[in-house]
Amino acid sequence: MLTLIKNASIVNQGKIFISDLLIEDERIKQISERIDVNSDIEIDATGKYLFPGIIDDQVHFREPGLTHKANIYTESKAAIAGGITSYMEMPNTNPQTLTQELLEQKFKIAEEDSLANFTFFMGVSNNNLEEVLKTDPKTVGAIKIFMGSSTGDMLVDDRKVLEEIFSKTSMLIAVHCEDENIIQENIAKAKEIFGEEVPISEHPNIRSEEACFKSSSFAVELAKKHNSRLHVFHLSTEKEIKLFDNTIPLSEKRITAEVCIHHLWFDESDYQEKGTLIKWNPSVKKKSDQKALFQALLDNKLDVIASDHAPHTLEEKKNPYFKSPSGGPLVQHTLLAMLEFYKNGKITLEKVVEKMCHNPAICFQIEDRGFVKEGFFADLVLVDLEKSWEVTKENILYKCGWSPFEGQNFHSTITHTFVNGHIAYEYGSFDESTKGQRLKFNR
Image 1: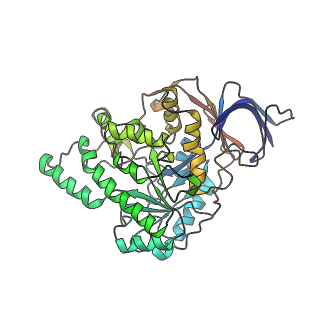
Image 2 (image 1 turned 30 degrees about the vertical axis):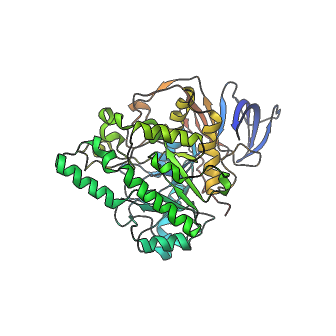
Image 3 (image 1 turned 120 degrees about the horizontal axis):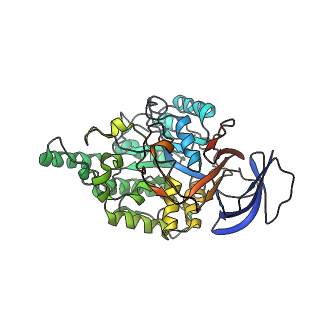
């Protein structure tokens, strides 16, 4: 099967250049200024931009056990509409992914149902070290530790357990950092003032800068002590930025960090309009935090942009503060939101691709993805930067049926998404005849 893309503006490795690109079966066969072959499919990409497929290193697709909110099929479909060709899914499902058997069960579901490429993280609790250490670094993206609030027994707060994990595993350790003791103290203070009717505007005071910094600085301390490979998820405060380095190449970093689209897009002033729809853990905080995070992204102290896609039903989200779960659906709109920042002159296309495609591939050592390169898998996204559209209930693809971006007018459109050379998405239509693949890692 030959697919020829003509006259695309390819964005790759810090450059933009007009070129043809030939796909043979699953991989990129040739990139050249002019390619003349008899192809099965030819696409004229004149005026459009061709990116590597987005790699989202943090999603919650809710399967198994929480499928009234989302599942691997529905959310991977939304992901490819958003230009995400590969995702890494978290272990806080039901049951929680705390054994190798449960981990492999999720891979089997994805092999049947996922429209995008996938990996799943092995979960850590206070008492499953033996299972964690069985994790295969070549076929599993990372192990995940909730060093802060989570569901069930996935909060890892035993220092002895953490020391053992950081010292014994060779896997990349991905962490959610918020200090539970500080959070509980802040909840008690808020209840003294407001009773049980604590307003959503208190969320950044409860899930505070102090709670984030204490936990993330502890994770960094452990990683330095044991020379562990640490990746800190969803930075949300200016104070935490100083924990990270931009003086060495990414491929040599032992400690890396991610920022999520909602911490770049929203700030605490948005709680008044959006309410619990923008309740996330860690919380959306001050405008000064948002600005500092964006600058740290540009300065390469923060390495990756992700979604932390975490859907709940609208009915669940509209509960009062303490009963409303944290998280929201984002995979369909994350790239488009970053392209909006590009339109506003805040970031270049080259930097967007670096943070959303190249760097996740480098951080996690993903095999043959994340770049537009001959021989690599043809995970590609075509974007029309001049075609606007509005997010409405009718075009939201998440199973939960809502988005914090509803009503937003985006000034770019994703026209095509290729997954392993297969045109999975084209102008709003899906071809589900080919499923995504399990990611492999060069470790």
